[in-house]
Image 1: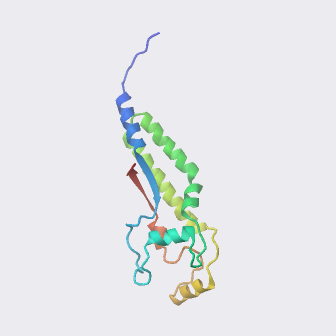
Image 2 (image 1 turned 120 degrees about the vertical axis):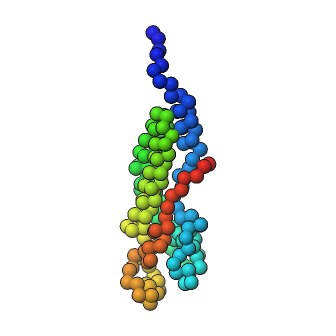
Image 3 (image 1 turned 90 degrees about the horizontal axis):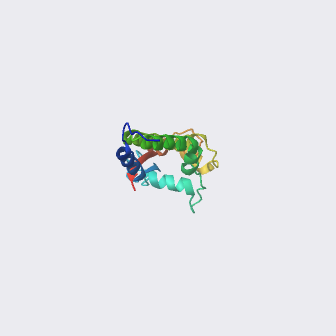
Amino acid sequence: MSVKISKDKVQRVIKAINQLAKKDVLVGIPDSAPERDDAARSPLSNAVIGYIQENGSVHGIPPRPFLIPGVRDAGDKIADTLGRGAIAALDGSAVNAEKALHAAGLIGQNGARAKINTGPFEALAESTLAARRGRGRKGTKPLIDTGQLRNSLTYVIRNK
């Protein structure tokens, strides 16, 4: 029995796999994200506000996790997408492998945004609701006041 090689893609496959293995997809709120529109009222960045909301605060703010659960909820779709990226790398297509990383990041970003929209979260304190009403806001959903926190969620692809 003999083996005939009609097309040798070994070098392309190795290159695509190496490129894929050197990358991370990160979902969150970069601290370098644009500042909030209401910076005069709140000196905190969206990244700091997101951290406080995710973990709670000793100042009476209960945890309202949205980032980790949101990405976890999208986990099956993310895994499928990354699997397609791995197959693309095994096929020698570094471009399609990279596209899969971007698609997976977008799925994770949208999963976290969806979690902000749907919760469930501990209800807001009456003092928070009163402060919102004082600013002319009528919404009562936790994590959604101006929408800036939700809109600041993004993904990045970085080299390890």
